[in-house]
Length: 175
Image (spheres, rainbow, N blue to C red):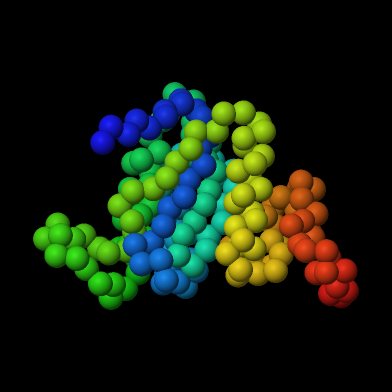
């Protein structure tokens, strides 16, 4: 198996997918305040800008931009994951290996990242992030998911409130 080489672009923007070890658990949304605090703490220690984010019950997607001359997203993720794991009550199943290493069984060890190439790539990942709760069947439209930067983009005029809503839902009079 060839070695995986991560793309490191100083000051670059990256798309990430980070998942729980047990994908059927709702740890992220059930402990949303602990997750937000983990992000805030790490951003204070090692700054980065969260361009967009969606937090689902068992995984999250986000777009970050790192400071100029900085490529170290891996340490940031390690710190976020460990801060979150320390903040929540234990109770997850542990493999023998994790027990031996004294690790929690909260997160998958790895994460998926993609270096953003250009504005079109950035925009496509922005849409993917905001559409994800609809894709997974949690809500009928992006605006209905509370744990998303979608609402900020609506306030900024970059998305309409009914973006990514099926035509039958767009026709509903919700007021």
